[in-house]
Structures are given as structure tokens and as C-alpha cells.
Length: 222
Image (cartoon, rainbow, N blue to C red; front, side, top):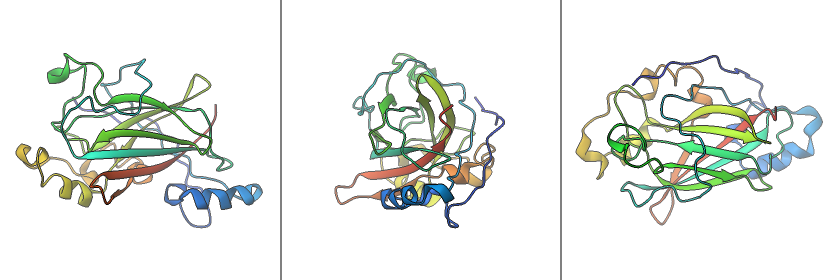
């Protein structure tokens, strides 16, 4: 099933010439020191798509033992106006497994929970998940869906993306390599073209062989 883009918040405000998504925690601390003169990029809104299931579990490990390259997803949530971390926001994610299947739909209909979960942000704005590198499915580039809830209100709905070069490297190995070549890359994806560059994850492989994907999402509290 194809997903159609929706109207997005499209702020291009810059912080010293750099996007907030490129900032680490040190950068955020510096931003706090000069809060009167800075603004943060507002993460673009994108469609929630057809595979959302409300009321997911509050948990960090969302793999349920399914195969795939192990990955830690680190999402920082900050106020788009001040760069200050938002504590106790609920980050709600869902994505396809290594075979390109969503829980609760199609081949995954018998299980409604794998690769889905919610985490609350810490005082530093961090919500962290243990998952696997997502697989691809026809008509879409590789992505993770996300909603951010603050005080029971949905303040952001979007999608997170991966550098194509990193995905190519991951997909050369099992179980991904058994599926053949994916049919859509970032530049060819209609939803990615509507703000995806500002929702691109920074992905590195650590010494334990685990992929660590990180992004900072700037949102409005209401």
C-alpha cells in the first residue's frame, strides 16, 4: 500500500548555519546558554501511513526475537523554539521487520506488537529503543514511523530515514540479502522528497557490531 504525503510544517530556521539534527548533547548545552538568540529546526510533519496501531506497549526492546541487524535508535526531543530538551515526552515508533513486514498487517497479522513500542524521554530529551535495522517493502524507501506525544497531545507525526549508503551495506548481509534489491531509494521516494533530508538519521556501527541511529527532533509543545 502506498502512502501519500500530507501538509508539513516546513521551518528552515538555522542555528549558526547548522541543523539541530546535527547537534550532539554538547551542542544542545551550548544552545541553552544562548537561548535568547537561537531557534531550532522544526522537524517536518509527514504522513502516519496505513500501519499505525494505537496504544502500544511502553518498552525499550521491540524486537520480540525477530532476526535482523541489531540497532539502537536514539531519539532526542527538543523544543523547536528554545532547543531545550523536553522531558517525559512519549516517543511512539513502528517499522517493518527485516523481511519488510509490519506487525498487525498482511504476513504479520498474527502478531500486533513486533517492531512497535513507546518510550518516555529522559531529562536530556532522550528516548531509546532496541530494535533491528528495518527491511524494505515495495514502493517505499527504508524508514521508521514516529509520533511524539506531550501531555497526551500528539505534537509530531513523521518518518525517520537512513542514508542509502548505510542501507546498501546492511542489506549485503543476511537476512536482508536473501530478498534481492529494493525498488525505491531515498531520492525516488515521494514522501522522503517532502522533508526527508531533515529527518535523516545519523547511523554508525559500534565496536559490538550494533548500529546506532540518532536524531534530534524539534517539536512544538502544543
